[in-house]
Image (cartoon, rainbow, N blue to C red):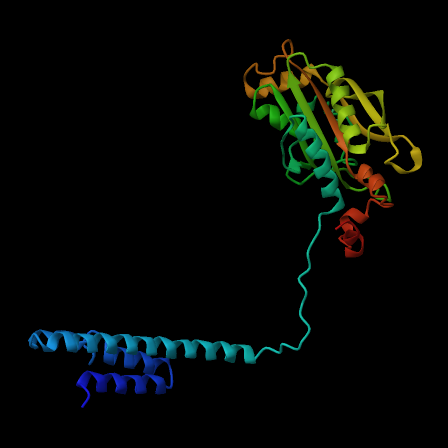
Amino acid sequence: MSHELEQLRDTALGEISAAPDEQSLEAARVGYLGKSGSISVWGERMRGLSKEEKPIVGKLLNEARTAVAAAIEQRAAEFRASAETAALANIDITLPGQPAEIGGLHPLTQMLDRAISIFRRMGFALAEGPDVDTEWYCFDALNTAPDHPARNEQDTFYLPDGRLLRTHTSTVQIRTMMSAPPPIRVIAPGAAYRRDEVDATHSAQFHQIEGLYVDEKVSVADLKGTIEFFLRELLGQQTEIRFRPHYFPFTEPSFEFDVRSKAIKGGKWLELAGCGMVHPAVFEEVNRARGDDAYDPEKYTGFAFGLGMDRLAMLLFDIPDIRYFAQNDLRFLRQFA
Ligand code: PHE
């Protein structure tokens, strides 16, 4: 006749494989293997057994425990599997799926990324400033008189609180100099805003890369060399570059420069940027606001430039209308993804 433990084990196995749900399975587990379960209590009972009986019963007890625990795990797995099947039963796998769309970078972002990587190779760090800024950062600190036409309400978007949408990224020149002493070598890509009449080549929002390099003995030659290296990397070694004298309140001397390149359709000169040597009055205002003499105009010189990115991107990617950039039309954007 089989031992009581073997009978117990067989009853347990029968009960487990017949358990209708997880609750009854858990009840069976507690009833057999729990602290005072009918199999577990044999552990206590062993103490009262004779030397001869102990190993036999010990072996039976181990076997019973292992078998019952395995059966419980197997039944639990069955429950889990059928729960999954039930969940899947509600899904019609014959329906067409929803393909996940993979996005792409906006053509202006691609343009900026290319430009940024060239400047990074020349040691320029990235700087940034807010699109909404104060008159001081946008104009006063940049030596722009209160009656300068650029400050006109017809040209600039003013907020009710007196702040404005920056009309150029030159605000970041000032922000950078306020935050650190020279030497400074940064570029600041970003949006700028003007109340232009919107048409195929003018948008109220456009994009610039500002550059600022301040150190001892920085000269116009450094400015030209930097710009030429940048443009030849971007547009090819045959690119022609032309500097023309210009006027900006915050640089002296000031220039605009144009490019002509095979990469640009039509073979025409393209006006690309304003630039110049940082005006000493800008350094002086920065010093006054900093409360120190970090940007001593007797010791330091610097160059700055503001490159227009939209028209460059339009020419490189053959985009006929600047308004496409902001319309979020996937038929347009997909062509660059
Ligand atoms: N901020 C000027 C503009 O937007 C460009 C510029 C930048 C000129 C830096 C000189 C130096 O037209």
